[in-house]
Length: 347
Image 1 (cartoon, one colour):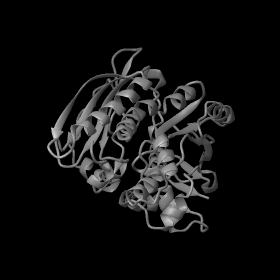
Image 2 (cartoon, one colour):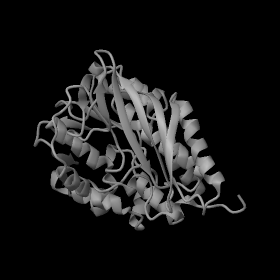
Image 3 (spheres, one colour):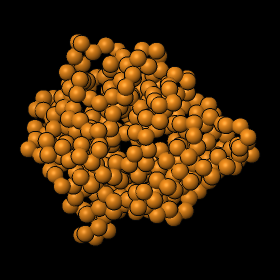
Image 4 (tube, one colour):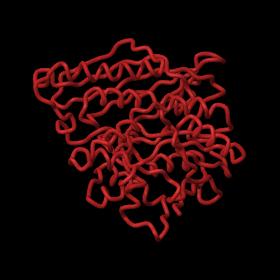
């Protein structure tokens, strides 16, 4: 290419921040007619889990998910990597093993150099290879705003499925990646990041949750979800509501990208982040020490975030240590408590 195209300048929103907001989505889904549930559908729409799970036989169930979005970084290859890692993550969050994928492509083929699309697809292909996932095809359309993602299929034993609905009182919450990604990527569009910071956030998003998912299988993890577009507070609220428990989060223990507070103070807060906070605010009690910026940071719309694990108290330290031994920057950020079901306390 003769000139460098910054992909993030081609869209109004980026990454998981372009999702339809949770409040609007709830209104849409409530209008769908109820249908008789197939007995083989183990996990469907009811719990707001990361993927659907369909039982094939007593030993095997299919895990199915789809995710696509507008560019979250400027480099096409990196965009493909991040999009693939993000889509695959839903299978890891269910405790499954991803096996196949289909590309979903929307691209202004007459206006952008075809090498850009080739680089996006190459980045995704390399990430799929890292995950051991076979690309079996895909679908493309001509669209003025580039978008890319994948539909991913995995497998899991029906007895080993992880959902967001089984957290137990006393469980410790472990988060396997830092938050603040949405604020960083908004800052990227506004050219507020250094090259080093761009490299850091890209690495965070492009890192697979494969190792964390495989490690959690060795321990008594009662519930799991990945933290993406609805933010830490949004996904934690879903876990609290579906598990009918209260969650306590400790603000100072939550890992965040460096300088994220400074960037948020400068106004680099995605609209999706503000929507996230507005959606959960009635279910969250914040410490008086936390101001509006702190609250937005906790609701930040993450792309390709980490796993949020509710692990039995007696296993928490061992799991956290093993995550650290495998170079996963995990942190213990809270616990499941007896209080008001579906409520979040932030201390």
